Length: 446
Image 1 (cartoon, rainbow, N blue to C red):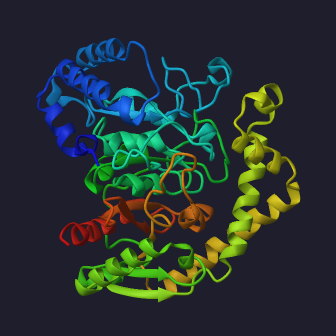
Image 2: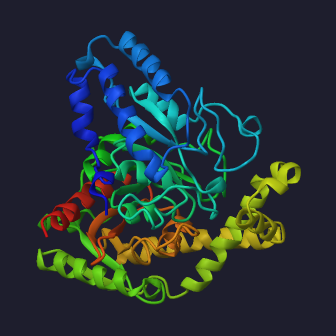
Protein backbone atom coordinates (compact mmCIF):
# COMPACT_ATOMS: atom_id res chain seq x y z
CA UNK A 1 0.00 0.00 0.00
CA UNK A 2 1.19 3.50 -0.81
CA UNK A 3 0.38 5.14 2.53
CA UNK A 4 0.26 8.55 0.88
CA UNK A 5 -2.95 7.44 -0.85
CA UNK A 6 -4.79 6.77 2.42
CA UNK A 7 -5.17 9.93 4.45
CA UNK A 8 -8.78 10.33 5.62
CA UNK A 9 -9.73 13.67 7.15
CA UNK A 10 -12.06 14.35 10.06
CA UNK A 11 -15.17 16.22 8.94
CA UNK A 12 -15.77 17.49 12.48
CA UNK A 13 -12.27 18.92 12.86
CA UNK A 14 -12.22 20.39 9.37
CA UNK A 15 -15.60 22.06 9.77
CA UNK A 16 -14.58 23.52 13.14
CA UNK A 17 -11.28 24.79 11.74
CA UNK A 18 -12.91 26.51 8.78
CA UNK A 19 -15.51 28.16 10.99
CA UNK A 20 -12.63 29.41 13.14
CA UNK A 21 -11.16 31.03 10.03
CA UNK A 22 -8.13 28.72 9.74
CA UNK A 23 -7.57 28.40 6.88
CA UNK A 24 -9.62 30.93 4.94
CA UNK A 25 -11.66 29.36 2.13
CA UNK A 26 -9.31 30.54 -0.65
CA UNK A 27 -6.32 28.83 0.95
CA UNK A 28 -8.41 25.77 1.72
CA UNK A 29 -9.42 25.49 -1.95
CA UNK A 30 -5.78 25.76 -3.03
CA UNK A 31 -4.83 22.88 -0.74
CA UNK A 32 -7.85 20.83 -1.81
CA UNK A 33 -7.07 21.18 -5.50
CA UNK A 34 -3.39 20.41 -4.93
CA UNK A 35 -4.32 17.18 -3.14
CA UNK A 36 -6.73 16.18 -5.90
CA UNK A 37 -4.10 16.92 -8.58
CA UNK A 38 -1.53 14.86 -6.68
CA UNK A 39 -3.62 11.82 -5.77
CA UNK A 40 -6.58 11.53 -8.11
CA UNK A 41 -4.55 10.52 -11.19
CA UNK A 42 -3.69 7.39 -9.18
CA UNK A 43 -7.17 6.44 -7.94
CA UNK A 44 -9.63 8.24 -10.27
CA UNK A 45 -12.19 9.08 -7.59
CA UNK A 46 -13.37 12.24 -9.35
CA UNK A 47 -14.83 12.79 -12.79
CA UNK A 48 -12.25 14.96 -14.63
CA UNK A 49 -13.21 18.64 -14.57
CA UNK A 50 -11.28 21.29 -16.49
CA UNK A 51 -11.20 24.52 -14.50
CA UNK A 52 -12.02 22.90 -11.15
CA UNK A 53 -9.74 25.29 -9.22
CA UNK A 54 -11.21 28.42 -10.82
CA UNK A 55 -14.77 27.24 -10.21
CA UNK A 56 -14.07 26.43 -6.57
CA UNK A 57 -12.31 29.74 -5.96
CA UNK A 58 -15.34 31.55 -7.36
CA UNK A 59 -17.64 29.52 -5.11
CA UNK A 60 -15.37 30.27 -2.13
CA UNK A 61 -15.52 34.01 -2.81
CA UNK A 62 -19.29 33.88 -3.03
CA UNK A 63 -19.42 31.92 0.22
CA UNK A 64 -17.30 34.51 2.03
CA UNK A 65 -19.49 37.30 0.67
CA UNK A 66 -22.57 35.58 2.10
CA UNK A 67 -20.91 34.80 5.43
CA UNK A 68 -18.21 37.38 6.19
CA UNK A 69 -17.94 36.15 9.80
CA UNK A 70 -16.98 32.42 9.72
CA UNK A 71 -17.95 32.00 13.35
CA UNK A 72 -21.54 32.83 12.41
CA UNK A 73 -21.50 30.73 9.26
CA UNK A 74 -23.45 27.49 8.73
CA UNK A 75 -22.00 24.21 10.05
CA UNK A 76 -20.29 23.04 6.83
CA UNK A 77 -18.83 26.45 5.95
CA UNK A 78 -16.11 25.88 3.34
CA UNK A 79 -16.14 22.07 3.64
CA UNK A 80 -15.50 20.40 0.28
CA UNK A 81 -17.89 17.58 -0.64
CA UNK A 82 -17.81 14.95 -3.38
CA UNK A 83 -21.11 14.26 -5.18
CA UNK A 84 -21.83 10.95 -6.92
CA UNK A 85 -22.28 11.45 -10.64
CA UNK A 86 -25.92 10.43 -10.76
CA UNK A 87 -26.79 13.41 -8.52
CA UNK A 88 -27.49 16.67 -10.34
CA UNK A 89 -25.39 19.70 -9.38
CA UNK A 90 -26.00 23.13 -10.89
CA UNK A 91 -23.01 24.09 -13.03
CA UNK A 92 -21.68 20.55 -13.48
CA UNK A 93 -22.75 18.00 -16.09
CA UNK A 94 -24.20 14.66 -15.06
CA UNK A 95 -22.74 11.65 -16.90
CA UNK A 96 -24.00 8.81 -14.72
CA UNK A 97 -20.79 6.93 -15.47
CA UNK A 98 -22.07 6.48 -19.03
CA UNK A 99 -21.38 7.55 -22.60
CA UNK A 100 -24.80 9.12 -23.04
CA UNK A 101 -24.79 12.80 -24.02
CA UNK A 102 -24.74 14.81 -20.75
CA UNK A 103 -27.50 17.10 -21.93
CA UNK A 104 -29.83 14.12 -22.15
CA UNK A 105 -29.34 13.39 -18.47
CA UNK A 106 -29.59 16.99 -17.23
CA UNK A 107 -32.03 17.97 -14.52
CA UNK A 108 -32.63 20.35 -11.61
CA UNK A 109 -30.11 20.37 -8.78
CA UNK A 110 -30.75 17.59 -6.29
CA UNK A 111 -32.34 18.39 -2.93
CA UNK A 112 -29.35 16.87 -1.12
CA UNK A 113 -27.04 19.34 -2.91
CA UNK A 114 -29.36 22.22 -2.06
CA UNK A 115 -29.06 21.21 1.59
CA UNK A 116 -25.28 20.86 1.45
CA UNK A 117 -24.86 24.28 -0.14
CA UNK A 118 -27.27 25.82 2.36
CA UNK A 119 -25.05 24.35 5.08
CA UNK A 120 -22.05 26.15 3.56
CA UNK A 121 -20.42 23.27 1.69
CA UNK A 122 -18.43 23.63 -1.52
CA UNK A 123 -18.86 20.99 -4.22
CA UNK A 124 -15.38 19.64 -4.91
CA UNK A 125 -16.71 17.82 -7.96
CA UNK A 126 -18.55 14.79 -9.25
CA UNK A 127 -17.33 11.40 -8.02
CA UNK A 128 -17.12 8.37 -10.27
CA UNK A 129 -20.02 5.92 -10.25
CA UNK A 130 -20.64 2.55 -11.80
CA UNK A 131 -22.76 3.13 -14.89
CA UNK A 132 -26.14 4.43 -13.73
CA UNK A 133 -25.42 3.07 -10.23
CA UNK A 134 -25.49 -0.47 -11.57
CA UNK A 135 -22.81 -3.14 -11.82
CA UNK A 136 -20.62 -1.89 -14.69
CA UNK A 137 -17.60 -0.50 -12.78
CA UNK A 138 -16.13 2.96 -13.12
CA UNK A 139 -12.41 3.77 -13.26
CA UNK A 140 -11.90 4.24 -9.53
CA UNK A 141 -9.24 2.25 -7.69
CA UNK A 142 -9.06 1.33 -4.02
CA UNK A 143 -6.65 3.72 -2.23
CA UNK A 144 -5.50 0.89 0.06
CA UNK A 145 -4.58 -1.38 -2.85
CA UNK A 146 -4.99 0.23 -6.28
CA UNK A 147 -5.22 -3.18 -7.93
CA UNK A 148 -8.38 -3.91 -5.95
CA UNK A 149 -11.92 -2.63 -6.47
CA UNK A 150 -13.16 0.19 -4.23
CA UNK A 151 -16.63 -1.36 -4.42
CA UNK A 152 -19.61 0.23 -6.04
CA UNK A 153 -21.62 1.76 -7.25
CA UNK A 154 -20.58 4.75 -5.11
CA UNK A 155 -16.95 3.93 -5.80
CA UNK A 156 -15.54 7.43 -6.25
CA UNK A 157 -17.25 8.79 -3.15
CA UNK A 158 -15.83 6.09 -0.87
CA UNK A 159 -12.35 6.34 -2.38
CA UNK A 160 -12.33 10.15 -2.20
CA UNK A 161 -12.97 10.06 1.55
CA UNK A 162 -10.47 7.25 2.16
CA UNK A 163 -7.78 9.16 0.25
CA UNK A 164 -8.46 12.40 2.09
CA UNK A 165 -9.53 14.29 -1.01
CA UNK A 166 -12.70 15.36 0.82
CA UNK A 167 -13.98 14.67 4.35
CA UNK A 168 -17.56 14.10 3.17
CA UNK A 169 -19.01 12.54 0.04
CA UNK A 170 -22.52 11.70 -1.15
CA UNK A 171 -23.44 8.31 -2.56
CA UNK A 172 -26.57 6.29 -3.18
CA UNK A 173 -27.54 2.77 -2.25
CA UNK A 174 -30.05 0.62 -4.05
CA UNK A 175 -28.80 -2.69 -2.62
CA UNK A 176 -25.26 -2.28 -1.27
CA UNK A 177 -23.72 0.76 -2.92
CA UNK A 178 -22.81 2.71 0.23
CA UNK A 179 -22.14 0.05 2.86
CA UNK A 180 -19.97 -2.18 0.65
CA UNK A 181 -17.60 0.49 -0.78
CA UNK A 182 -17.29 2.02 2.70
CA UNK A 183 -16.12 -1.34 4.01
CA UNK A 184 -13.72 -1.94 1.11
CA UNK A 185 -12.20 1.53 1.53
CA UNK A 186 -12.07 1.57 5.33
CA UNK A 187 -14.43 4.49 5.96
CA UNK A 188 -17.87 5.03 7.47
CA UNK A 189 -20.81 4.68 5.11
CA UNK A 190 -24.30 5.67 6.31
CA UNK A 191 -27.45 4.65 4.47
CA UNK A 192 -30.46 6.28 6.16
CA UNK A 193 -33.95 4.88 6.32
CA UNK A 194 -35.46 4.70 2.83
CA UNK A 195 -36.80 8.14 1.90
CA UNK A 196 -35.18 10.01 4.80
CA UNK A 197 -33.06 12.05 2.36
CA UNK A 198 -35.11 13.09 -0.69
CA UNK A 199 -34.04 11.57 -4.00
CA UNK A 200 -35.30 14.51 -6.07
CA UNK A 201 -32.61 15.36 -8.60
CA UNK A 202 -31.03 11.89 -8.53
CA UNK A 203 -31.09 9.63 -11.60
CA UNK A 204 -33.16 6.63 -10.48
CA UNK A 205 -32.04 3.04 -10.50
CA UNK A 206 -34.85 1.28 -8.62
CA UNK A 207 -37.05 3.93 -6.93
CA UNK A 208 -38.50 1.45 -4.42
CA UNK A 209 -35.00 1.00 -2.97
CA UNK A 210 -32.89 4.02 -4.00
CA UNK A 211 -31.54 5.84 -0.94
CA UNK A 212 -29.15 8.79 -0.70
CA UNK A 213 -26.32 8.15 1.76
CA UNK A 214 -22.99 9.57 2.78
CA UNK A 215 -19.35 8.72 3.52
CA UNK A 216 -17.12 10.15 6.24
CA UNK A 217 -13.91 9.03 7.92
CA UNK A 218 -15.59 8.37 11.26
CA UNK A 219 -18.96 8.19 12.95
CA UNK A 220 -18.71 11.70 14.40
CA UNK A 221 -18.58 13.04 10.85
CA UNK A 222 -21.71 11.12 9.89
CA UNK A 223 -23.43 12.43 13.02
CA UNK A 224 -22.56 15.99 11.98
CA UNK A 225 -23.77 15.62 8.39
CA UNK A 226 -26.87 13.46 8.79
CA UNK A 227 -29.06 16.03 10.60
CA UNK A 228 -28.32 18.55 7.85
CA UNK A 229 -29.43 16.18 5.08
CA UNK A 230 -32.19 14.01 6.54
CA UNK A 231 -35.81 15.09 6.83
CA UNK A 232 -37.19 15.88 10.30
CA UNK A 233 -34.07 15.06 12.30
CA UNK A 234 -34.89 14.76 16.01
CA UNK A 235 -32.06 16.47 17.89
CA UNK A 236 -33.58 15.44 21.22
CA UNK A 237 -33.53 11.71 20.45
CA UNK A 238 -31.02 9.85 22.59
CA UNK A 239 -29.78 6.28 22.60
CA UNK A 240 -32.46 5.24 25.07
CA UNK A 241 -35.36 6.27 22.84
CA UNK A 242 -37.26 3.75 20.74
CA UNK A 243 -39.04 0.45 21.13
CA UNK A 244 -36.20 -1.21 23.06
CA UNK A 245 -35.09 1.78 25.11
CA UNK A 246 -35.14 -0.33 28.25
CA UNK A 247 -32.14 -2.23 26.94
CA UNK A 248 -30.09 0.86 27.71
CA UNK A 249 -30.73 0.54 31.44
CA UNK A 250 -27.24 -0.96 31.76
CA UNK A 251 -25.76 1.60 29.34
CA UNK A 252 -25.26 -0.71 26.38
CA UNK A 253 -27.34 -1.85 23.38
CA UNK A 254 -28.46 -5.43 22.87
CA UNK A 255 -27.01 -6.79 19.64
CA UNK A 256 -28.68 -9.28 17.31
CA UNK A 257 -26.88 -11.55 14.85
CA UNK A 258 -29.00 -13.01 12.01
CA UNK A 259 -27.61 -16.55 11.75
CA UNK A 260 -28.47 -18.99 8.98
CA UNK A 261 -28.31 -18.89 5.19
CA UNK A 262 -27.79 -15.10 5.07
CA UNK A 263 -24.71 -15.12 7.28
CA UNK A 264 -23.42 -18.17 5.42
CA UNK A 265 -22.96 -15.95 2.36
CA UNK A 266 -20.00 -14.24 4.04
CA UNK A 267 -16.60 -15.61 3.04
CA UNK A 268 -14.01 -17.03 5.47
CA UNK A 269 -12.14 -13.78 6.09
CA UNK A 270 -15.33 -11.85 6.74
CA UNK A 271 -16.75 -14.55 9.04
CA UNK A 272 -13.55 -14.91 11.04
CA UNK A 273 -13.29 -11.16 11.50
CA UNK A 274 -16.98 -10.94 12.40
CA UNK A 275 -16.60 -13.68 15.02
CA UNK A 276 -13.66 -11.79 16.52
CA UNK A 277 -15.70 -8.57 16.59
CA UNK A 278 -18.61 -10.30 18.33
CA UNK A 279 -16.27 -11.85 20.89
CA UNK A 280 -14.71 -8.48 21.57
CA UNK A 281 -18.08 -6.79 22.00
CA UNK A 282 -19.27 -9.57 24.32
CA UNK A 283 -16.05 -9.32 26.33
CA UNK A 284 -16.76 -5.64 26.86
CA UNK A 285 -20.11 -6.47 28.42
CA UNK A 286 -22.42 -6.12 25.43
CA UNK A 287 -25.20 -8.68 25.05
CA UNK A 288 -25.13 -10.62 21.75
CA UNK A 289 -28.17 -12.67 20.74
CA UNK A 290 -28.19 -14.99 17.74
CA UNK A 291 -31.50 -14.95 15.89
CA UNK A 292 -32.98 -16.96 13.04
CA UNK A 293 -34.34 -13.89 11.22
CA UNK A 294 -33.80 -14.80 7.58
CA UNK A 295 -34.56 -18.49 7.01
CA UNK A 296 -36.04 -17.60 3.60
CA UNK A 297 -33.09 -15.50 2.49
CA UNK A 298 -32.87 -17.02 -0.99
CA UNK A 299 -36.48 -16.02 -1.63
CA UNK A 300 -35.84 -12.51 -0.31
CA UNK A 301 -32.93 -12.21 -2.72
CA UNK A 302 -35.11 -13.29 -5.63
CA UNK A 303 -37.83 -10.80 -4.71
CA UNK A 304 -35.38 -7.93 -4.35
CA UNK A 305 -33.82 -8.66 -7.72
CA UNK A 306 -37.27 -8.86 -9.32
CA UNK A 307 -38.12 -5.35 -8.12
CA UNK A 308 -34.67 -3.98 -8.89
CA UNK A 309 -34.50 -5.22 -12.47
CA UNK A 310 -38.10 -4.26 -13.29
CA UNK A 311 -37.67 -0.73 -11.96
CA UNK A 312 -34.27 -0.19 -13.56
CA UNK A 313 -35.75 -1.09 -16.92
CA UNK A 314 -38.67 1.27 -16.31
CA UNK A 315 -36.34 4.10 -15.25
CA UNK A 316 -34.38 3.79 -18.49
CA UNK A 317 -37.25 3.20 -20.91
CA UNK A 318 -36.70 6.37 -22.92
CA UNK A 319 -32.90 6.58 -22.71
CA UNK A 320 -32.35 2.91 -23.54
CA UNK A 321 -34.71 3.09 -26.50
CA UNK A 322 -32.77 6.06 -27.92
CA UNK A 323 -29.22 5.24 -26.84
CA UNK A 324 -29.16 1.51 -26.11
CA UNK A 325 -26.01 0.99 -28.16
CA UNK A 326 -24.13 3.35 -25.81
CA UNK A 327 -24.89 1.34 -22.67
CA UNK A 328 -22.28 -1.04 -21.31
CA UNK A 329 -23.05 -4.78 -21.59
CA UNK A 330 -23.71 -5.31 -17.86
CA UNK A 331 -26.21 -2.45 -17.70
CA UNK A 332 -27.91 -3.42 -20.94
CA UNK A 333 -28.30 -7.01 -19.71
CA UNK A 334 -29.95 -5.81 -16.47
CA UNK A 335 -32.36 -3.60 -18.40
CA UNK A 336 -33.29 -6.38 -20.82
CA UNK A 337 -33.79 -8.71 -17.86
CA UNK A 338 -36.05 -6.12 -16.24
CA UNK A 339 -38.12 -5.70 -19.39
CA UNK A 340 -38.95 -9.40 -19.20
CA UNK A 341 -40.24 -9.20 -15.61
CA UNK A 342 -44.03 -9.49 -15.32
CA UNK A 343 -45.49 -6.42 -13.54
CA UNK A 344 -47.52 -8.82 -11.41
CA UNK A 345 -44.31 -10.41 -10.13
CA UNK A 346 -42.94 -7.02 -9.15
CA UNK A 347 -46.19 -6.17 -7.34
CA UNK A 348 -46.08 -9.49 -5.49
CA UNK A 349 -42.47 -8.86 -4.45
CA UNK A 350 -43.41 -5.46 -3.04
CA UNK A 351 -46.26 -7.02 -1.05
CA UNK A 352 -43.82 -9.61 0.25
CA UNK A 353 -41.49 -6.79 1.26
CA UNK A 354 -44.18 -5.23 3.43
CA UNK A 355 -44.78 -8.56 5.17
CA UNK A 356 -41.03 -9.02 5.65
CA UNK A 357 -40.66 -5.58 7.23
CA UNK A 358 -43.44 -6.30 9.69
CA UNK A 359 -42.13 -9.78 10.53
CA UNK A 360 -38.58 -8.52 11.01
CA UNK A 361 -39.67 -5.63 13.26
CA UNK A 362 -41.80 -7.97 15.38
CA UNK A 363 -39.04 -10.58 15.80
CA UNK A 364 -36.32 -8.13 16.77
CA UNK A 365 -38.66 -6.35 19.17
CA UNK A 366 -39.66 -9.64 20.78
CA UNK A 367 -35.99 -10.52 21.19
CA UNK A 368 -35.25 -7.13 22.74
CA UNK A 369 -32.62 -6.32 20.12
CA UNK A 370 -31.49 -2.74 19.57
CA UNK A 371 -29.10 -3.25 16.67
CA UNK A 372 -28.52 -5.99 14.13
CA UNK A 373 -24.93 -6.78 13.21
CA UNK A 374 -23.45 -8.47 10.15
CA UNK A 375 -20.35 -8.22 7.99
CA UNK A 376 -20.55 -5.21 5.68
CA UNK A 377 -19.43 -7.32 2.73
CA UNK A 378 -18.69 -10.94 1.93
CA UNK A 379 -14.98 -10.23 2.42
CA UNK A 380 -12.30 -7.64 1.69
CA UNK A 381 -12.15 -5.82 -1.64
CA UNK A 382 -11.56 -8.38 -4.40
CA UNK A 383 -8.53 -8.13 -6.65
CA UNK A 384 -9.26 -6.60 -10.03
CA UNK A 385 -11.40 -3.77 -11.37
CA UNK A 386 -13.86 -5.73 -13.52
CA UNK A 387 -16.35 -6.16 -10.67
CA UNK A 388 -17.48 -4.04 -7.73
CA UNK A 389 -17.97 -7.09 -5.48
CA UNK A 390 -21.06 -8.68 -4.00
CA UNK A 391 -23.80 -6.58 -2.39
CA UNK A 392 -25.56 -9.55 -0.83
CA UNK A 393 -24.77 -8.67 2.80
CA UNK A 394 -26.77 -5.44 2.45
CA UNK A 395 -29.64 -6.96 0.52
CA UNK A 396 -32.21 -7.78 3.25
CA UNK A 397 -31.80 -4.42 4.98
CA UNK A 398 -32.04 -2.43 1.74
CA UNK A 399 -35.04 -4.54 0.72
CA UNK A 400 -36.72 -3.59 4.01
CA UNK A 401 -35.65 0.07 3.79
CA UNK A 402 -33.84 0.00 7.14
CA UNK A 403 -31.06 2.41 8.14
CA UNK A 404 -27.61 0.83 8.12
CA UNK A 405 -24.01 1.87 8.35
CA UNK A 406 -20.59 0.35 7.92
CA UNK A 407 -17.97 0.91 10.61
CA UNK A 408 -14.27 0.29 9.86
CA UNK A 409 -13.44 -2.93 11.69
CA UNK A 410 -9.84 -3.91 11.19
CA UNK A 411 -7.84 -5.16 8.24
CA UNK A 412 -6.88 -8.50 6.77
CA UNK A 413 -3.36 -9.91 6.88
CA UNK A 414 -2.88 -8.37 3.44
CA UNK A 415 -3.82 -4.93 4.76
CA UNK A 416 -7.29 -4.67 3.19
CA UNK A 417 -10.03 -3.05 5.30
CA UNK A 418 -13.05 -4.87 6.68
CA UNK A 419 -16.32 -3.39 7.89
CA UNK A 420 -18.93 -4.14 10.51
CA UNK A 421 -22.50 -3.52 9.33
CA UNK A 422 -24.86 -2.06 11.93
CA UNK A 423 -28.60 -2.02 11.18
CA UNK A 424 -31.18 0.05 13.03
CA UNK A 425 -34.96 0.28 13.08
CA UNK A 426 -36.92 2.06 10.36
CA UNK A 427 -37.08 5.78 11.06
CA UNK A 428 -34.73 5.55 14.05
CA UNK A 429 -31.63 6.87 12.27
CA UNK A 430 -30.80 9.14 15.20
CA UNK A 431 -30.73 6.19 17.55
CA UNK A 432 -28.68 4.07 15.17
CA UNK A 433 -25.91 6.66 15.08
CA UNK A 434 -25.98 7.13 18.85
CA UNK A 435 -25.85 3.41 19.60
CA UNK A 436 -23.22 2.70 16.95
CA UNK A 437 -20.89 5.10 18.76
CA UNK A 438 -20.63 2.50 21.54
CA UNK A 439 -19.46 -0.10 19.04
CA UNK A 440 -17.01 2.31 17.40
CA UNK A 441 -15.37 3.00 20.76
CA UNK A 442 -14.94 -0.72 21.42
CA UNK A 443 -13.57 -1.44 17.95
CA UNK A 444 -11.23 1.56 18.02
CA UNK A 445 -9.90 0.48 21.39
CA UNK A 446 -9.15 -3.08 20.29
